[in-house]
Image (cartoon, rainbow, N blue to C red):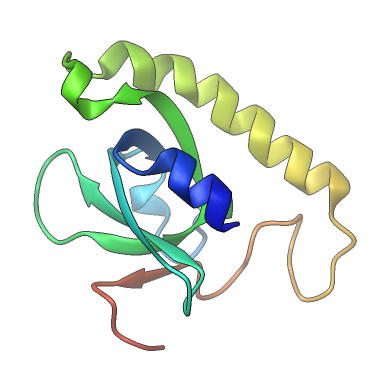
Length: 116
């Protein structure tokens, strides 16, 4: 988990699979620091505003480092298919256990670092 988080840091990511905040699905941002205690990665949205701490299962890389430039629209569009495939793979491999289709039903994201 920490190694995947490290590979995402500073990269553009797309959010998907959130049930409690579906309006965030498909939004892109920049991955930041990983909070090991919470098992979540900080994400700052491209549009600005408050960032979120999100589970790695709700993120997919959609491009190179943000410093590489570009609007990221092409990367986001290309990443949409990758995100769908990743969520499908999680759903196919899930055995249940309090989760629906491998994507957490509740508490899938956490605003600003507060505790649920």
